[in-house]
Image (cartoon, rainbow over the protein chains, first blue to last red):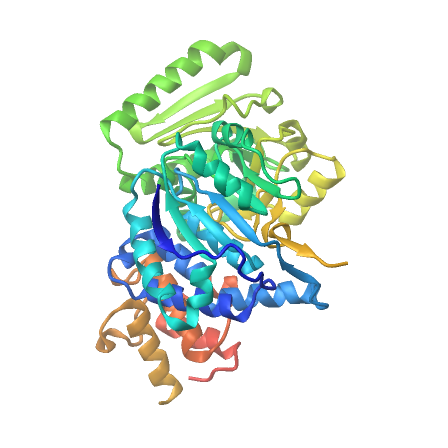
Length: 400
Length: 79
């Protein structure tokens, strides 16, 4: 085990959520990252710095205070974070959520080295050395150890009030075997599945510039992480509404042609092309008749689009791709999303569809999936409400 | 420092460019420094300079030097 940063005092006092010292610290850390030459080269680090900036945290604090005006909340104590290896920067978000809720934090970072994460930790170490943030230093411990060294997981689990496990499923299942103290709680981020809905009439009426912006957003949602993030859409539904079949065909072509255009900046190495092609062949062999693959369109090796004739056979296990492989299907009305009633579904990206309409439909139909409804281009924007949890509320306790 | 000077300074600091480049006609993606990553630095610098919190829609709409001046009026900042 290697201690990477911080000097945690497990009995340090818990703080109320959004305490001044934590908000000041995040703003200062954000500023240092934004002015660090190396950090500026990493888009994911800059996204974190942008999120942690004063303007955003102050707005979040105000929202929090509107519903918690009687100051009854305080951090639970110690949070043990087991960070994800697919999206390295998320461990810094997890840490920031723990601090904002008022807790000390033990953060297990991925055993694999990531340049962007190393850079963030380098800057963090400097910031917590400053006298103004000695409290933060005592609330911080970044550690690194191999997943087989379960003794550390046992030790940290026995001392924490909240355990946060960033999946996938196998990691969650394996860490769950390690006991927590009876009063401690757990937040698990398991494997999820995401999809998007595009309104046909909206796509047809958009300017060329707006279509390109939409597809750039979709590119960031998907290609940027090789479609490996839980919130990257795999399936795109075209909402037909009052349009005719010809309109649908035109809207599909317009969207996918533009996605293909923006995907030209994607670094498609041979191994990805090969893996994607193999994946497609296996799916066609195993599932073609059963799952109504209507047609498959290939835009060179950069983009495959598998058309589905019927979404009532939806499967979150099968309808997924990577490195630029997507599924699409036409729906006549929003009500048809009930056919995707699957606990695995996390994010529903929308364009030209009223987010409230989807929300109402999820609630009125008592659906088990869909934890987020966001515009295209925003699916990777992690925040304190994530995966069905209000993380600040969950990581703090309320005094009745 | 006038508001215009502060505004130009925020562009220079946020995008890490020389002040001489900051003038009318400067648009998103018209220079390599003002890409999607640079944009985040710019928004943060403008917020810090005028002690404001910008709405998401305004962050997206901030597409040029001139547009920024128009947006800031909503936050009672006259440039």
